[in-house]
Image (spheres, helix red, strand yellow):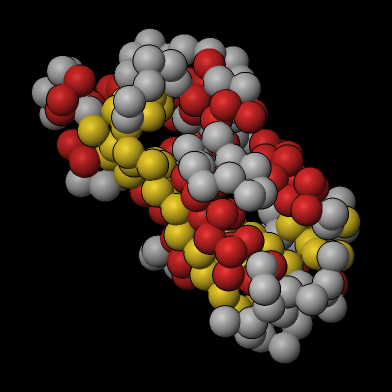
Length: 214
């Protein structure tokens, strides 16, 4: 495993919610982070069929464009009753013909699909959020970190915090959705803590332990 020896990195994302979450997690560690959106980098085509492949594509694109280490996240909602969908195509389910993303529409698509297969009880709506972080260097070296959190899909959506599908995901052991949690509650982790709640925080915790700590 290669250690990260700089405090300046690029967040390889154009997703405002995701960029803010990564900044919330990495900021307390003393990093200066600009995003691919800030730097007007072209979004690479995510042609992978796994979270790991797509995270690597994004991180390498920003590392090559910036000459700096880049940290990407590829994440999605994996629903058992839908055979793992939307999975790596989680963002695609929100796409409109004009190229914008509408997650209210995407959440309705999920609910419609669950109803179609008869998944109406809580025990039939098991799901997990998956996050894979990729740290890439300009020389092409990469490190991958995966985090998952189990839960259930709920309906109707609850809460206006977070982003994406957060209002319909209730993590296991909690009575609230990610959409009803503050950023601190959702992540449940700060540097030095042992517990992490969200998929992204769990992946991030592994990244810190692997690449930052001696």
